[in-house]
Image (cartoon, rainbow, N blue to C red; front, top):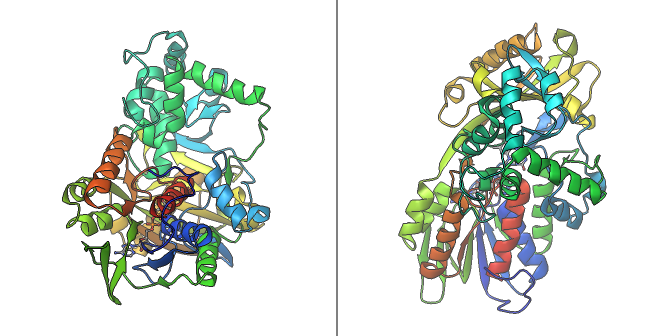
Length: 480
Ligand SMILES: Cc1cc2nc3c(=O)[nH]c(=O)nc-3n(C[C@H](O)[C@H](O)[C@H](O)COP(=O)(O)OP(=O)(O)OC[C@H]3O[C@@H](n4cnc5c(N)ncnc54)[C@H](O)[C@@H]3O)c2cc1C
């Protein structure tokens, strides 16, 4: 990979960016702003840019249909927002606490959780989420002095990786895993945390697991180090954009347009062929010749385009699994709710699953800009990896099924006054243990057999917006 600080090297020629989600747009924007000598063209299959980022009006406000927040403690998304002049409008959630549906009730998550792993066992006991026996099992972790794996697991590159289930069940027991860690991580990738790579899906836990054989001790030490460094304990964990996350991709598009970068919509790349001097990309507009190509599409599309020039990498990428989810936005009268909406929302424990609902964000409590004295806006998720039954329902049946689950959990007594269904099919990649190591291998093989072609985006080094932005930046540096 190119050293990000290296400002030497070729600064001309044409780069074609395939896919105008956050990754591709960031790559094109980085090239256009840092390397104006390079001729950049963006191809997008859909009739809009943004990919999994979409904001549309709902109940009179702009409400996200997909991503509505990004991690604040890593710099990439914050820095991109700053570069786009958005720093002053960033909002942090008005309500940070969350609940979990378990043991027949909505129970508040205890203070001191790190990706669901408890560091305050008294708070865990008071939460009622885990049985007394479950707390005692978690407490055993404090006595562990040797790594059960025979040495520190998973390094940052994914070597020695294991699943989150294997790590957390082994250290703190099944109850903590099933009622806290799994629901929290499944809320991110709609997957099975028993199959999720610690290195790719829970990097903070991987770091802690390497630091100390006792996970709780390591996480407490991390928290103490942050306090000693006088890190602000109230610093936002997440940021969002009050007029919607799509502000980010809309602004990237307008900056690209202003810089003269063509962004072709309804223009899927259908073939990628190596030529004597570089690459030719087949599109409905004809063949576009490129010196370098950034493939910022979902994995299956990248796999199809690489089938000719890089068949081995193509077949490996094709093995990646994806989860499909529906994001159903509901407006309900507050008086029809039997539960206070005094948190950012709730998750559903792995062991206590409801017929359809997998998570519910109380959007109008979470975000001050969506607050309304009479109406609650709920973003309700359905569908998970390996279970597409909810996605197969009609819109009406899906809303009815979720309304029934909200009656069970929140005492909802009447149908929503407005509903919007967004289906995200094959949207969330599932990272099995060893994923990051495999991606490293794919990239090395690609450099060998398809020089000048880079892959970037949610399928590779992480699916959150900061990880996608980081990959877009890196792809631009590699292509410059
Ligand atoms: C419901 C949901 C909620 C989420 N919430 C959050 C959140 O709160 N915070 C967070 O950080 N992340 C969240 N994510 C994850 C995050 O939104 C995505 O991982 C990220 O937006 C993916 O960006 P990308 O650019 O890699 O891919 P995509 O957004 O998938 O973009 C790829 C683009 O390639 C285009 N394309 C496909 N085929 C072709 C072709 N042949 N030629 C040209 N173009 C093509 C597609 O149309 C698309 O526009 C969420 C995801 C979902 C689905």
